[in-house]
Image (cartoon, rainbow, N blue to C red; front, side, top):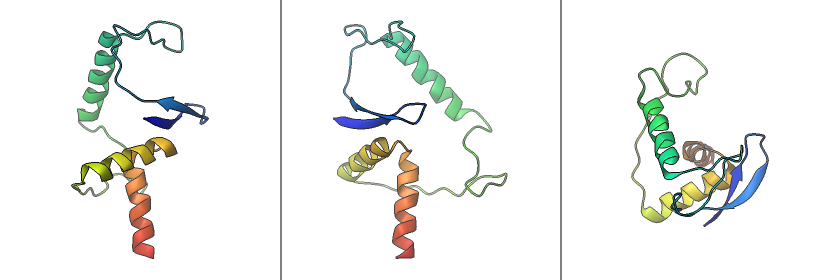
Length: 108
């Protein structure tokens, strides 16, 4: 699958997303060092731990202290795939795409 990926400087680059065995294929980090399966697993565990940390998470959408209300939604696989592709293409989170679409729908 091809997708637009945003770099930290805001520029976009087209990338091909696929499963890669990092111990078989050579993937280099920006500093030129090799990115391995072990490094990918460690990165995933660190990100997961940060998401579970008490008091963690993003700021309130209202700009105040406290939590923004959340809802859970079940989606068919095709709709979820299209949502993910759109978020990647736009360089935003899936929740941003959902909020924008819901806002447009409710103001129409």
